[in-house]
Image 1 (cartoon, rainbow, N blue to C red):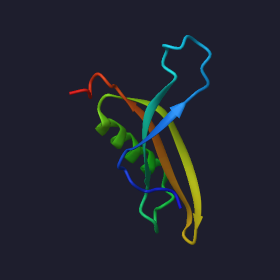
Image 2 (cartoon, rainbow, N blue to C red):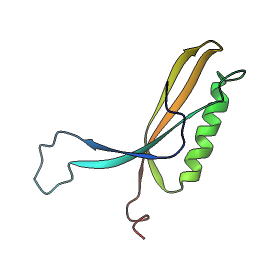
Image 3 (cartoon, helix red, strand yellow):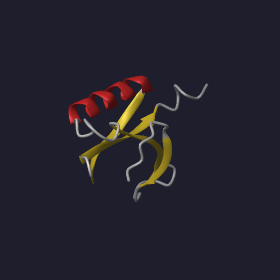
Image 4 (spheres, rainbow, N blue to C red):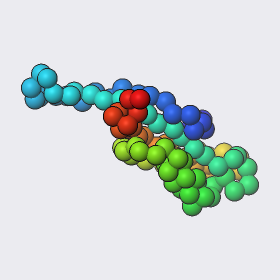
Length: 95
């Protein structure tokens, strides 16, 4: 079952690096997932996207890295969820 929390989580992403040793080789990205309540209306993708847009606005200064839409089949029909991956501006959050 997809994660249903809006509490951000941190994930460390590292990519292969071929440049100078002193260049950045990875960064921390946070994410949260949202879904409509299970049951009638759970498959309302436009509502889910509006909720995701509201949550992104609440983040303030953040760079959105990726949005992933998942769908789980349940006894009530498809149950979409969205995971938002984002990067906070470290200078703005250093205080």
